[in-house]
Amino acid sequence: MTFTILRVLKQPSPDDASNVSKLIKHSLIEFICTATFVYFGTLSAVSTGTKLGGGSGKGEDVARIFPIAFCFGITIMCMAYSIGHYSGCHLNPGVSLLMFFRREMSAVRMCCYWIAQFTGAMLGSLLVWGSVQGLAKSDENLITRNPPFTLGSNILDPEITVGSGFLLELMGSFFFYLVISQTALDKKGIAETSLVAIPIGFSLVVVHVCLIPFTGCGVNPARIFGPSIITCMADRSQCTTVIGDWWWIYYIGPFCGALLVSEFTALLKWQVEPEVVEYPVTTKLLPSSNEKVEIADEEVFPAE
Image (cartoon, rainbow, N blue to C red):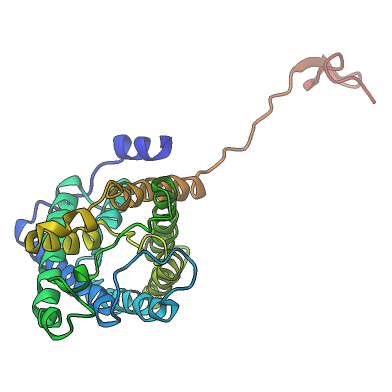
């Protein structure tokens, strides 16, 4: 935490909020693209006929994990290529917090992005509901409540403790954000190439494959917020299903992950100063001349 605090206190915040029209434009891009990302990502969970989480890691419905994982990963990769050169393609409050910690964006811009991301996620979930609302009537044996499959909301598997769920979300966020940081921001890496979005997308695939059976894989507070809030608004009786006593792990985990990545990347750039040793010297007169020279003190450094 020391590196991050010092960076925030010492390094000036970038002037990225003075141009109001540009800030509004970029926030609107984040709003629309977060809605798009949440729409296709959570729709993949609904289209495969499952709620995210609850797999217990035992292999149930394992065939459904890969389509969902690849949908989230390829979607973020395509969005990064599409609008990354405009707003940065955060689509994730945790990523925006990481950029703030690294002094890549100001607090004002981060807050504007957060508003755009959370509200955009709600719009994305509303669009999913509008796209599949007929499912609740067409197959009563499969779906008994509306909205269907709680719009792809994440739930913590009952056999996983809350502490384990937090650790899973923390480590998943750390890995995902670290890849973003070291590919998109590190000038010594591939930041200046057109390959940045590829490792970002595949890292999200990896995280989803590992976390879906246990937590449903959040690593994005906006993606968690949209489906759960819309589900609660549609059916209050389902609130306890999508917002349990474990709800905080999907928010605190990614934000703590952003802090850890900020610390680790600062450590990578930490320049260790070489130790300078000053040897004591004495002045002596050379026997062949009157010239005085400084040599190392023999008492301090005796001959070996």
